Length: 66
Image (cartoon, rainbow, N blue to C red; front, side, top):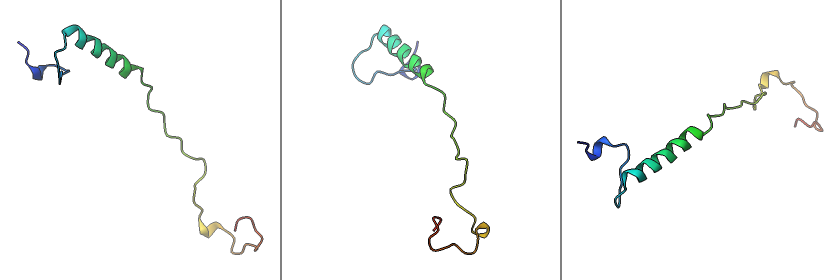
């Protein structure tokens, strides 16, 4: 004899037939397997910060590096 805690799905409201539970289970499993794998995170090729000790000591007032 199976109890409500032995099943994978639980009907919150109403009465679902075993065929209906089987259909929704098949849909959910198909969606779960169809999801793409996690895409790897692409890191930028260059750091977004700069090391101040490597910059020249003086920049011209009209310099674009401002």
